[in-house]
Length: 207
Image 1: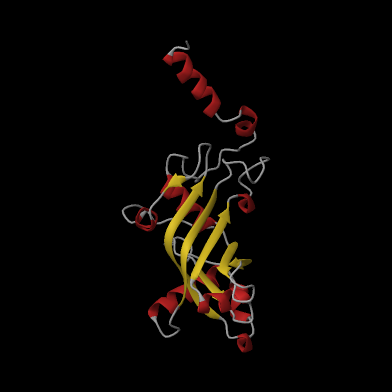
Image 2 (image 1 turned 90 degrees about the horizontal axis):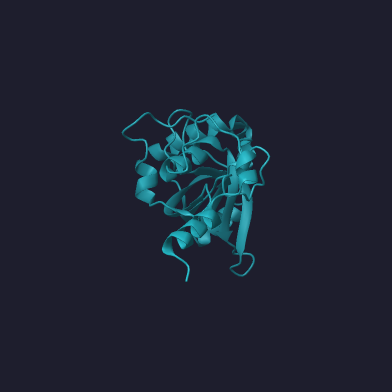
């Protein structure tokens, strides 16, 4: 019969991250530790400039539709974690959201160039999926003004996009969060933990 100590040691060896995977993973200044799930999620949202926004397609009989989009969660140094988008109904994403608000937004650390030589699917190369409702912002609201400032600061080109395309500002109202940034499966983070992170400390800085 195997002893409990032997079984525990075997389990630890099985769960230990592969040494080759760790050796190829660079140490990144400013990236939170794997134990800081909410901080890592907010760091990913602040540092990235684009991701994959998925909606329930109105053109494909309810099948999911994913689209690469630019976004911003705040002006540099004042990121708040809520992704804002500048979308036109000439694109299926905005049309879908106006019919069915359910959506998800996925970000990867890989485009930041901080994952080194490891594969994008390697768990230590962080990836974040926010799910919730993609809502149209009232263009006359103060929220629209701050969202537009955040978007145009991070994506100056947007200012010159054709007015005839009638771009509108949307935001993702976050309901669920899925984060993987280390071996062992996803990290549990509530929307409250995610959104409240940083309020009692220095504001997150984005590039």
